[in-house]
Amino acid sequence: MWPVTAVAAVTCAGMIACVLTGAEIKKLHIPLYILITLAGAAAMLVFGFLPAGEALRQFTADTAVNPLKILALFLCITMLSVFLDETGFFQYMASVALKKAGNSQIKLFVVLYVVVSVLTMFTSNDIIILTFTPFICYFCRAAKIQPLPFLMAEFVAANTFSMMLLIGNPTNIYLSLSEGITFGEYLKNMWLATLLAGVAAFFVMFAIFYKKLKVKIECGGEEIARLDKPLAVIGGIHLAGCTVMLAVSDIIGAEMWIIALAFAACLFLTVGIYKAVRRERFTQLALTLKRAPWSFVPFLLSMFIIVAALEYNGVTAALAKILGGGSPVPVYGALSALACNLVNNIPMSVLFGSVLSFAEVPASAAYACIIGSNIGAYFTPVGALAGIMFGNILKGQGVKLGFGKFVLCGTVVALPALAAALSGLALIC
Image (spheres, rainbow, N blue to C red):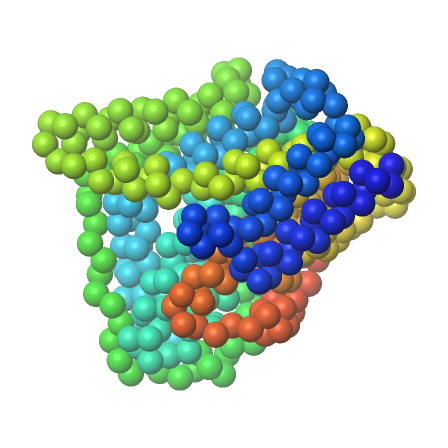
């Protein structure tokens, strides 16, 4: 048991070190943490901690937690959102929100928080972070106001309201499918926890930044962004249709990954025909494929192999036994949030998904882990992939947000938000 645990621990430590330093293979623009996880997975197979036959069996199993099905679901949903972004939709919504605020930073703060919260529910936290962060930096620079309150409002809203729907975060998808939770069941049990966390986080941030927000905006911001309306309508219909079909997937008896794949294929076909008729270049489709999170594929598959090796050697069963006592909601919620910042929320979700399969706990434990996987991103920049992207974008924009300041601000907001979310979950489950 200890050798396989040591390999997993070294892999996670190396991964976090690479994330913190931003190490990458510059010529190929490949983050080094991906290669670290690949090396860890290879070590599990080479040293026999996970027989190749067992690994193959898990990758070909006709189960909801088959990693290939989860990847298909996540990539297809992401591409639907990325395409909508390529039409200018999210930047358009951001510019409209910023314009509506006028010269009031308080109004801007409230409007931005609401807009990001609503959009995150139907797309994903990663897409919102990628889209809104640079635009907020541009706007604050032009308006000559401090960007920190608005950047934190965006980051917190994106990583809170991503809990509302099953598709809001890949961790939601993985943990839900591992426990057999349907789209409808998920929403029924998570809506109150999400709303309470969102409200708690908003008022804490508002109190923190109130003095800065009282200062009026003296300079005008950006103009309303351009929007390709026909393509935005096509993209919006496909994303909305996919969300609705996912919501009734358990009723119609269709697997979610098949629904997402069908809508993604339909989108590419529809836009392809539209572009061909108009004799235009397939720019948005090409950029959508380019921007899809392909690096997520080796990362998730590697972590799946590492956790499968831990499970095969009885490590996750031992963890389940240790965590078996006590109230599952606070225990699993707090530990999952902490674990996010030790190994990142994706590996945490894969690990806890395995632990839950052995633990004799109610479904509320899985929901608690989902809450931890989202709100855990507040604590440090390495808690989630969204935090890593957030930090990289700020660095590229020349905005300084030190590790210490992020941790201090994030922790102050995270603790009441986590408590509110877990309390809401306990009231329903």
